[in-house]
Image 1: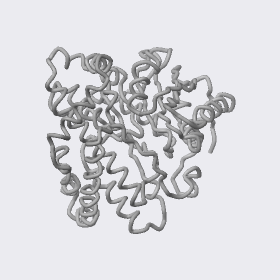
Image 2: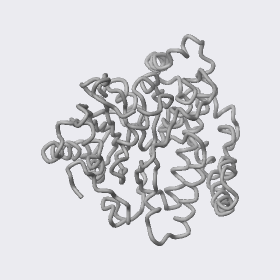
Image 3: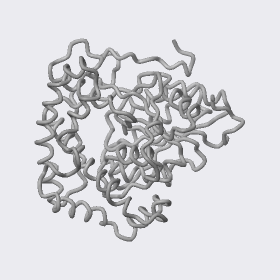
Amino acid sequence: MTPGPASIPKSCFLSIGIFAWNEEEGIASTLDSLFRQSLFRELPDLGLHCEVVIVANGCSDRTAEVAEGSLARQGRQHCRPEGFEGRVARIPRPGKVNAWNEYVHSISAGGARYLFMMDADILIHRADTLWNMVKTLERHAEASVVVDRPCKDLKFKNRKSLREGLSLAASQMTSAAEAQLCGQLYGIRSEAARSIYLPRDLAACEDGILKALVCTDNLANEVWPSRIRLADGAEHTFKAYTSPAAVLRNQKRQIIGQTMVHLLIDQEIPALPSGQRQNLAATLRERDESDPNWFRRVVERHVRQARYFWRLYPGQLSQGFRRLRRLEMARRMWCLPTAVAWWGLTLIASWLAYRTLKSGCVAYWPKVKRASADFTDPVSLSLPFEKSQACGGK
């Protein structure tokens, strides 16, 4: 079913939240790619409205000012400005988890049917991406979340190095699993999002928590992968980590995040009384407010009990090989060297993650420069960057 004005509140049909932490250099390009989306033509034609909110969290640079300038320019120059309004929300405390909670529960328009979340360092290179994502949610009532296909910028390079080939093979292994949720860009029904609250000391692994909760209706049922739907014709591009140091730091962050997902989803939430599980967002928020360090103590206790760095969560070192088994034989053989390299990388990153957690640090989010071609110019990457028809351009 295509969304129409008869059944949808006129105030705000869709809220788009963009999480930004010190993205002064790239956020203008991200916003330019966003406003090329055909979504901004389709919504006004149906009498619908959306908002774009840049959630600048703990920024020490000019991210907010650059974003405000871009939004003002779009308000003046965009051919369909009546279909959207933009604003910047400044949050003093850095961290995507805190920004997510603030956006979902306080900042976003209360009447919005859908909340779309995106990072401030991506480009949306297909003009119909967001509109196709909206249509997917409208057509599939069982889906709570819609995702697009994330593409590393390396994919569009004509000549790739060995290291870049391994990086792309790792992406193929990851995408082979069901119900993948990439936190860089996704849409979620507002009622589903607002039934979730993320503990303040949770590392930036909100996509893992959301996937577990959405696919089980907040752990009330067995896993239902169709709660997450991939939209056809929807893609975005992001800069890949390619240097060994950057890849290692990112893998360390992932392991810390997966450890916290394991503790929350497999231990803490199931142990709650049924009444508290039924109102999970309020339960976790109240626990954060009454005892801000409760989850930090959960992590510290778990690390002491685990004793060894390779036992932070189940399947910690075998994850790459499990993903490899999902591929067809020819692709499996092609990705085998990547799986072996991934195992070695995970081993080292696990030791680093264990050492960090044992020291009492849970807020690990390194700002890593990802080397690639000029990401602000899609042509330089040979990207299939589609010009939006929102203003009738060709």
